[in-house]
Length: 196
Image 1: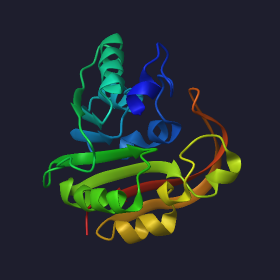
Image 2 (image 1 turned 120 degrees about the horizontal axis):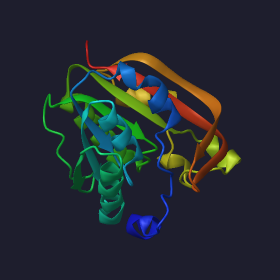
Image 3 (image 1 turned 90 degrees about the horizontal axis):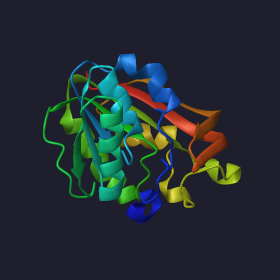
């Protein structure tokens, strides 16, 4: 499905990083960053330009080819891995930060992934996330059509019990990211650390 979405000359979600990530990337410890469901690479390339070692994982080969092209345009390098998040091994204590921008998954798969996130982060590693809440269904400005795949502060707090939340809230904000995310939206934002 995503290969078809990304199979176009333009960048579906634009070439600029997500606003929440752009405002808060300095919270991420320097080092290795994993970008989940990274698609065409806008966030991975931005982080590489800030000096991070970035790995972008996505199940779309087409999206990741565009990510590599965008990295070359910006004169940085990123590692890309084409994999299904259901089977992707995050390893243990490997990542200084993990970034999840609009990575919407069925609940069972999300719970499995979040378990891997908690194990995969190094001590004091950071998990940064922005995603749509179920209220987003009323806005119709992006995101999946299914409330089960949306995120909320309470779900995230429950599913990431070993992380310490520096920021965990739901807000309404303008999201202008390419053709697919455009307009007023309802999102959850997270900055959490593995330092219990």
